Length: 78
Image 1 (spheres, helix red, strand yellow):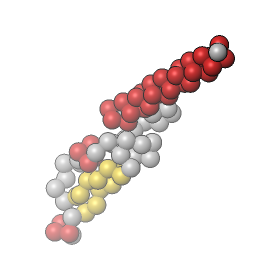
Image 2 (cartoon, rainbow, N blue to C red; image 1 turned 90 degrees about the horizontal axis):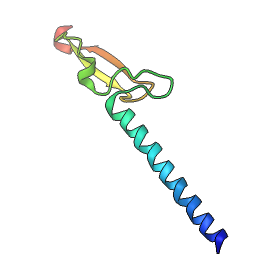
Image 3 (cartoon, rainbow, N blue to C red; image 1 turned 90 degrees about the vertical axis):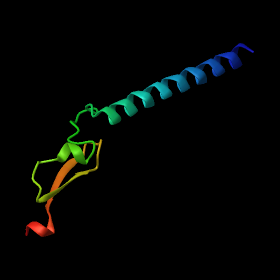
């Protein structure tokens, strides 16, 4: 009986820790905070706005360590 209680308590604690870590990661990804060892460059296209009407400003791989802004020339400006 004591062994069963120990196993159940251990599993419950593991689930609580896992859910807590997921919550922390979700917060980091949605608020644009640093994610372990990297700075997030952009989280959406608005973060990439270069105020140039002749470019389309796009955030590639938002909210990740690979996030980057890409500015492509608009056809009408060529």
